[in-house]
Image (tube, rainbow over all chains, first blue to last red; front, side, top):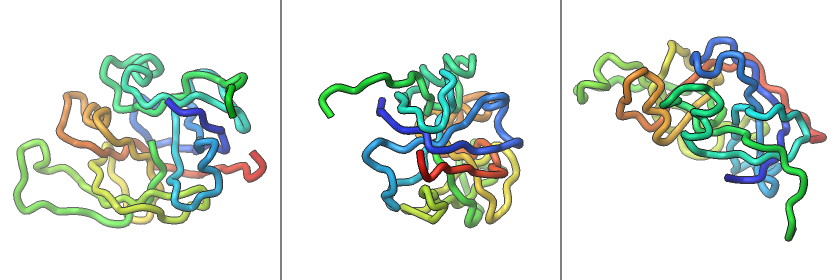
Length: 89
Length: 90
């Protein structure tokens, strides 16, 4: 899991059924913002996050399963929490 | 998941059964400026896509689940992207 910041969203009408009615947000690791070598990362929103939110992004099939309701989903990038505070920065 | 652009196709002369008849595309990851970054990769696709289109790509083990029964893919195109909004101030 990584702490990331939500910086945008994508609109995709033709997509896999597991993504239907799901908000897909653009997230960047807190230390990766503005680095052209860092690919844009997308995550399915599971908690109602918005642009500017600091969030916890999980890269696990189990999180994808919870959000999509599928036992074996083709999705692993999921926003699983909104960060209130991170200590030790 | 990553945002990528379709930059080509791959046609196999011979393949293991799960790959027969599958559309395979070369995809290039995009960064925040929607510029290409990293090395291109080959992705299976869940729906027809065309060269130049922006797409959502999922990688790793979960991509094997995009076709109902598990398939031996490690990168799959899950959708076509119409628009991307990035808040520069966020």
